Image 1 (cartoon, one colour):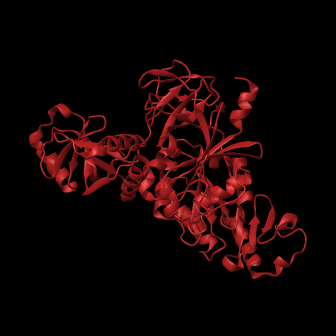
Image 2: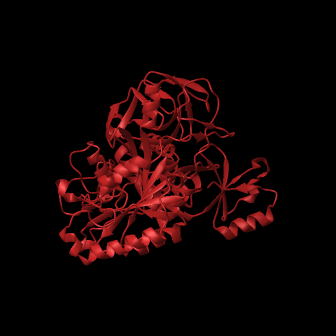
Image 3: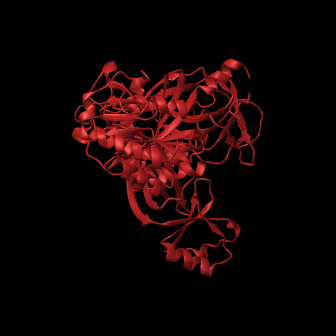
Length: 524
């Protein structure tokens, strides 16, 4: 591999921002794009009255509700690094999209609300990162508001998440009394509400300011110095190797909304965030980013990013080598080879044709229905598959039918395309072929209904059939229709596999006791 290509790959930093809803994730994404020169103005997420919306929220329903429901892919250059951010949905109803997105990154930034601390969705997402050994960088946000004691937050981080932490900086006051941060890593104090070079005060050898400053008279500054002394004596040491293994999280304090501490965070993060990493294959072994052959995998499919063109984009994480527009790629699952003439990169709904991309980058391929989530793509004739992406067992189910039977063509086309995005799962009853949809959370159905109407001109009737326990069957040949009943409905999934939908856990146990020879299994 030539040196220029190696240099390109080594400059990539691909990460996701994860958090509980409202911890400031999308706001942080906006500020990072601002520093990267990708946008000139930043709009907060809840910009409904002002008409300004977050750049990474492109879907109508996101702008109406002020939430992110899809994973946006955003790219910019900073400090000789090519940065790929995946801004994930925070709402727990969209955890499946987020989990798949986490398969496509090399590190994660975890946003924590300083007033609320570690919240349930943060714990779930953290566990996925931990499972994969992804390095995690923590940004404790909203220091411009009154929050909990920093030492208490650090303690909670370690106790609840079970990861050791190292404070890269430390707040001096908070809320109205927020004066700035004591930057341990860069050995300086960064003042809030101050611009230009006067913003930074250098530290001396003793850890106090090198030159006198009025901030030294503040009790908040004295408290910060005491806390720093405690951290130096009793806290963890900074260890870059342990950060790379996901065993130690560097912690940064700041405020994304007021843009305080974000640039310092970005520069330090890019210094320690990993380059593109190898990815495991299904049958063992791994693919190195610096391998000559182009390989990648599809972790997301999104329909109608441009409603005028009814397009479908398959998002590909490049694992190795170089992608060139016009090249031939093979999908071993089919197996089939295509010439890729339309490829794109993103800034939310703004996109541009990409002619060349390398390992670590995320690109979009225009899809006419050939690709599926989880597909491996190669630039040669290699016949292998990367490790499968997680698929969840849905818990909530609805029956769906078109309000206008004359528009059933729109109805079926819309369902087929939205199901392929992976957020909802498709089932049909055995004889009547009624459509049943399953999802991890209720909000998925609301988004589905909204998109069917706005993108496919198809109004739908949704009939809730409640929570069900879905189980697939290893030995389908042994299943008889007499085994079904009101508490055990037998349906087929989109791949024509048989699936039992049990009314509850009791019905599942009763079935297993009565039919011990039927081997049932669940997805994640």
